Image (cartoon, rainbow, N blue to C red; front, side):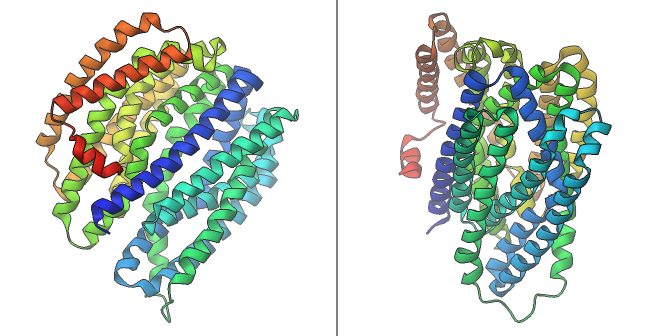
Length: 489
């Protein structure tokens, strides 16, 4: 199978898995926000999820991505080392999980009271289980990516999201409230972790004949490379979890609910780029390991161009339809999320670029450089949050995220440019085309907005915008319909 075929196949598999997963997650959000929970209750649930999301970094460090990086490397150069990579990384992960989950169980309650969040105390027992299940699910997802078998990562995501939908809705419907919803999230992760372990053992571990001994220094290399990845993951958690905690602490649980709704909308919009980036990253590393840097550079450049062409208009469109989308999809109780969604439209764009860039740096051996930038921007984000949230609430938190994430993304693009040599002028021309396409699309959407009166007319307006985008993108020569047909065939 050629590289292009493999990328197309992998992207379609990951996109399909992500789409099913996002639909399940989106359905769950709608059920919780429109049927079962007030903004305060929804905010409480997401504050708990964010709090234990901060803890889980200690249970994984950078081991999942470190293991994936060395799996990719040894699968090409020395396949007999792959079983040793798996055994060592699983052993280290199990030890970390035991320590962190046990510590959470013993000291989570006192710590929650100490920091002034006693509402988290009832979640501590389930939180320890969530930490363990999330750690192993993350490990197996990264491992499948390292093997360039991203369809299994996609399957794992589907199992997680579908399981969470079933369990959360069931537990809440039975009257267990916010705690029941949290238990549903845990149950979905436990099922996914079990599936991931079964697939990893039967489809990968048993396929490789282990070398007599691990290569000298393998343990040290696994742990050393996990250090910058740990810093990056820790900074990522600081970016994506602590802001929700701060919004909840400073503005109240309803503010956290509005902020979470806006973030979930932006994550849904970024899903296609995330799917392609997940497939692209190990392929770039593989080409670099084969000393085919020029091909890797052109592959990244083309990917970046198409992402910008799609997401500049998408971000503009999200700003325009934010108000009717929140009103008719989430309900009038969540109308306070509208300005947050509009600010997060900028995050949609930079996040899409980031999805095809950051993981690639890990596979290219530039994790340390990325970690430095991520740590600096995460600290800046925390400081900006502390300044903006008291004044502007959840909207201020969104503005802080967009500002710092833009800086982080631009730095990552520069790092990958310095590694591969990307033709940025060519990319810049695509940006110009994308801006012109955005103007035409936005004009049509603005004219249609006064006629939006419900979900059906909202979807029709979004479809109109997408259609105008497609016509203008093809007319400008930025998109080749035949190439698109070959890719999706």
